[in-house]
Length: 279
Image (cartoon, rainbow, N blue to C red; front, side, top):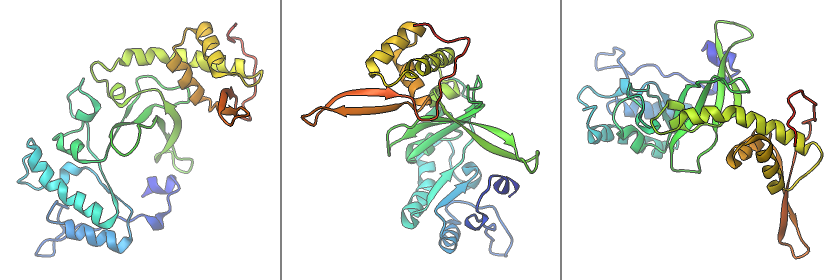
């Protein structure tokens, strides 16, 4: 509760359900599928739109075979059916296993059935190098079949202004890492990703310098930034997203797009710095 208060949560929209009880009226741990009806009732009474189960492994029945996918699937299908029936999203929390080097989708503890059955898997892990915006951790999507993959989001944990012992999340913008790179998967070229950070910073500096004079065509901008910094095209594109560069389409008399231009967003003023890039 202290962390929710520190984060400014609307406590009227948050509920913690009391533990289910056994036949003797004694509180017992929530277990799937035995207590699905209890959870369904809780969702109905609170009109819940999101349920968080942390960790899911603690809610599995004693007779489940953790290494057998079909055994895990049979249990999880009760949650799938409940989500469909109620329209409530269900977030399952797992911890990383010790299999360093494996892909992000295989780093979650327990059976791969957890990852195979859900709509989205999101990895949260510390960054090897703090980002320019001050992020020390990141969220990155490892699996998803509902939309294109979003940018990874950086964040840090800060002390609450009202209580330094209570942490709050401070969002720090996007980070240029995939989920595999975030968890250090073999073959994910994590070292290369770390090396691009200084190059991306240089590309951002060059973009600000070039576009401070006014809008330019993207091919010209990218070419000049590449020549000045040695950055790859993808790095320049990523730098433009970091700066929220405005990308405008221009139409000819025939109503067809004739060309595009890039320009700096309002409020991003040109500041002369000692490490300006020479073009």
